[in-house]
Amino acid sequence: MATPNKKKILNDPVYGFITIPTELLYDLVEHPYFQRLRRIKQLGLSEYVYPGALHTRFHHALGAMHLMGQAMSTLQSKGHHISNEECEAAQIAILLHDVGHGPFSHVLECCLLDDVPHEQISLMLMHDLNQQFNGALSLAIRMFEGTYERPFFHQLISSQLDMDRMDYLNRDGYYTGVAEGAIGAERIIKMLDLVDDQLVVEAKGILSVENFLNARRLMYWQVYLHKTSICCESMMIQILRRARFLSRQEGAESVFASDVFRLFLRDNVSMHDFQTNRTYLDAFTRLDDFDIWTCVKQGASHPDPIFSKLCQMLLNRRLFKIMLSTEPFAGELLVQLEKQLRQTGMPEDWLSYFLIEGQATNAAYLPSGDRIAIKLKSGNVIDIADASDLSNIQVLTNIVRRYYVCWAKNFLE
Image (cartoon, rainbow, N blue to C red):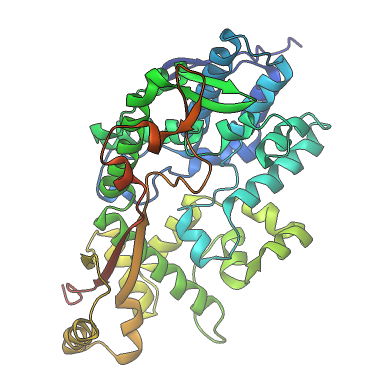
């Protein structure tokens, strides 16, 4: 039987033709762990705001792999020795950086898993794949963890100017139609260089980095923390919270759920559970957005009135009303909203599902973390916050906090 051609060319709407450059990368893309990402949307419930936001984590991971390939070529062209093995390992690490994301990503992390970050699940799955591929991912794992002796590889995978962010800003801007997301990734990558195996940007790339940081800040407020997205996520969290409650109640009619989803509804799953019980990791690798939506669709006709009401409202886009503020909400306002909901005839024990408080934060650049380093013509390396003459660079370093309250104002509709 003929061996299949594994050096594939794909047509990506953001970058045009991109290549899967090695057989190992092709085999990883074909693996069920990676194919699952086709069934997980990149932006969760943002399609309720931006109807075009239907792209998946599969798209994003391939795009990030492509940008990593470009970064490798740029650094090699500037005289830095990067072996073929290192080049492939860096692309593997970025390809698999999101393989541990669950459906609706951060929603799932906060309410179905017991403080289990997706990065840790990604790492567990990479170790699992490393066994399946006879140790071929060992170098990629060291780069991903930041234990490889050449730190710039980890910086390209996970830092404040990494290939992950470059792809998702470009891609999310493209699919939402929010033009401010366009960051000129190719120009930034062309400006990358190394000093003592640390990633730097040449001084002539300062404007592009400023644009990147501005784009990130704007995309947070316009897309990632859009008030309607926050509202939809809050509703989904309450649906999952009620589904968990019903799944654990003796005598309650069971919630319709796939076997793998039921496991996470029924059990409190911690990092320790993932590490010591293979059942949870296996179930997780079969869990995707479709499990959740099937549960929500069936939930719309469930006999539990709280569960069915929440499911119906989200399915039919009868969303909660939301208010945002830069200050915590006064107690009187919450008392007033509770009173409004009681006037609809809502029982007392329903209130916590239909009146939700929370906060969202955004910082485009954190100089206390891994900084973005600028290499001046003199050869000196300084922080972007010191190199930029933009007055608002300091603004970008502030953590902006928004408080929100959402409630079922249209409960009786």
